[in-house]
Length: 175
Image (cartoon, rainbow, N blue to C red; front, side):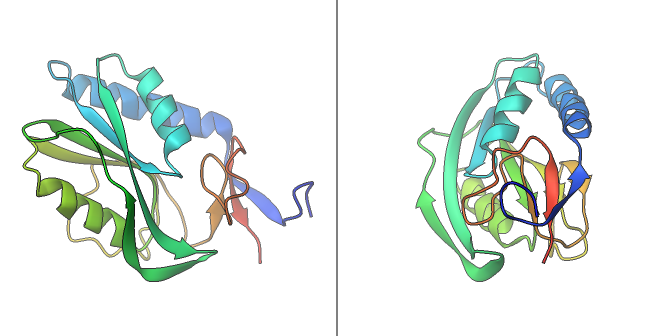
């Protein structure tokens, strides 16, 4: 047990995370070099990722946030509840959804459909983590930081009951 009271083991180091974010930021900057895209961060988990990503991009961009809920503890509740909507007008804009993790795919499907209803110029999806063994998607995720096994993870913005977000690495939370 560590000082936070949980059994955890490191899955992705801070160095690996920062290196991959640099690559994604470079790719996005190249793709949108003549545009000003808007990054839509999915709260609460993506706040650290979106801030690191934006600081490494070499183009102007805007940001906004949306907050949804589909989890209680370690379990998906099977539905998505919108808690905070975006305030920006995204019609005719290049939108980049920034997710911390795509697990079952329920939240990202809901969000993608919701934002496409506003008729943006394009929608790109960036996720730090993807669980390909359980993600049920009928569309492509444009930028994936890391594919991980179907384990519960914390750190770098991801939480367990609102705790452990502050850790600079990503850990698997042991049973």
